[in-house]
Image 1: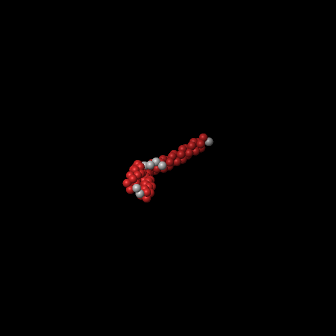
Image 2: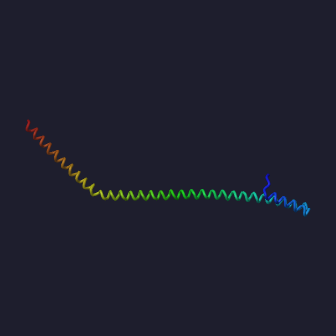
Image 3: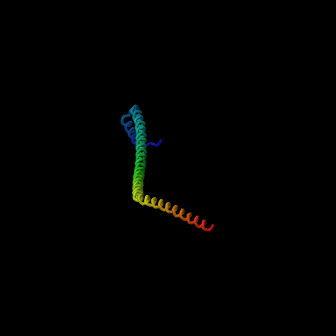
Length: 133
């Protein structure tokens, strides 16, 4: 295992402390504290990594939320445009309705006139056929 900067400093302090005190029991206590310190260092590294990953995930989520908001705004704009076009088309239809009714009545009148002309032509043809006999 690679010793970190902290572990080497603690080891140096432990050696200096042992030279001064000369108590083997304290060396065991310092060794234990080095292990505790290494465990704490590992925990801090994991916590930092966790915070980094959470921040990254949060940034990604915020970016996705911004994209969704943009899409929603675009959809709202398209819906408003479609509603405006529908209202315009309805208005044009309403404006054209009297003309359509007028044209329908003219068509009905022209059909009736056609039928009358047909009947008159049939009568004339019948009279011509009667004269030829």
